[in-house]
Amino acid sequence: VFFDHSTYAELPHKFEAGTPAIEEAIALGAAVDYLTNIGMEKIHNYEAELTTYLFEKLNQIPEVTIYGPEPNENGESRAALASFTVEKLHPNDLSTMLDEAGVAIRSGHHCAQPLHKYLNISSTARASLSFYNTRDDIDAFIVALKETIEFFSNIMG
Image (cartoon, rainbow, N blue to C red; front, side, top):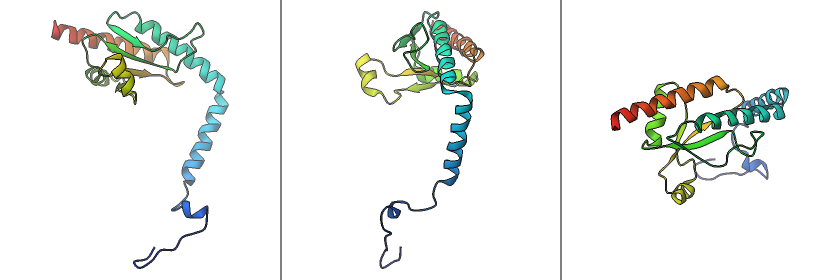
């Protein structure tokens, strides 16, 4: 590119400006190898087990409403996450308090504003799981969630 003109490469090179994403390609290869060594079916089954456990624990808290299907008897039929609300508690406040307790969740629309509008809810909280999570992580989340609910219950009466 010059001040007075530009030159263009032939296809497909004209669409490959700059340095190729060499590091990213190497990292992707390493990630694929890592997951392949663990085994995708093993990861799927473990995440399904964790999801079932998460739902069991959330369903024991009366103030919690879960959105979306329950896992089936094998823990399958859904992604390894739970979208939920807590009675009288905005998801943003919930996620902030859980963050203070060292628990990371997401709050908001999760790119699903039409669904939230249809359900007539402002937003939801979402706890997401992966194969590196454990039941202990879920237990810590549930303890922090119950403490947060109790904290706000005491404030709001």
